[in-house]
Length: 269
Image (cartoon, rainbow, N blue to C red):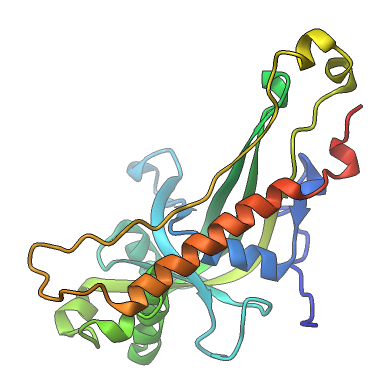
């Protein structure tokens, strides 16, 4: 059995609402980040002239460790983010001479629509994760290429070796990678079926006309469509294998989530 490590509960990452759904397990949190096609990264510029509101950007991100390549999702990891060299978040991170630009990273997976007897009791089956840390621009070429491969492989497994690599000089110059040293994190997970109140469950006029249950939701990879300049007749095996596994895994999780028992905190009252 792999060891179980957790993020410490700090003011930034402690879950209060529905805290029985909270997890601080490193593996669970890292898994949510790494299976999300997009993460949302928020930060402050620190300059009132740039606006009064925090910025938030959709980005591609992956957990990993350049220093310890054998580390897996059970281990403490950095979060690598891919972006354009002159984007504001990259400029701010590059200018920070301290620990790095403070950022928050969020990811959410929806696994089901939970339909109850009353609108107020409707919910989602979901997995969400938030990380808090300090972002620095990766400057070493070896680490940058390693991170670019890590992120490319998160898009389609096996894609890096099936493209023209390594990136050329122009591509390396126009792309920046952020390494986020994670300080804390937390997750929140909801599984199971509807959780209705006894006051409604005991009403035949309600239970006799309202359907309840869960509509499973999962992300599906569709059939590849060749581009206009494509000259390869057959869809590559690495792409078909990736799509098959992704679709099977996503459906399996969503259906399995429905069958999990509700925690005591959500049982009928």
